Length: 127
Image 1 (cartoon, rainbow, N blue to C red):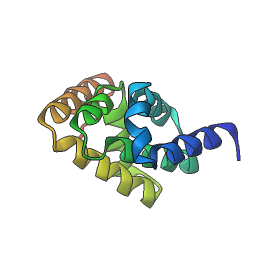
Image 2: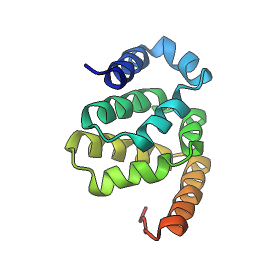
Image 3: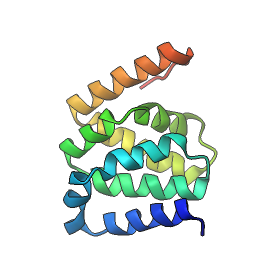
Image 4: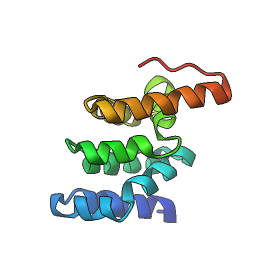
């Protein structure tokens, strides 16, 4: 197991513990995981990042907003939903997008981020 995969796996294991989630979020795990997701090409690492994010975000609007605030996270999630090459990643990313859509502020932040991404690279995302 390479270092990135081990790190993502460790965070995923920590996020599986409900009592650790707020502490992880307070220490910046959501932003760190989102940044790692944006640049990650390895499906094994990506799925662990997505799982950790899903556990951290689940049902918590403040944490959903933290993910929506993370630069590039919205575009990365939508790209995985639309054209991801790994079905597990696609499903987890779709669940995260649905979780963000439940909160009006997170949804608005993600929409703004997607518009900026579209303007920068000429792509279009449909929500």
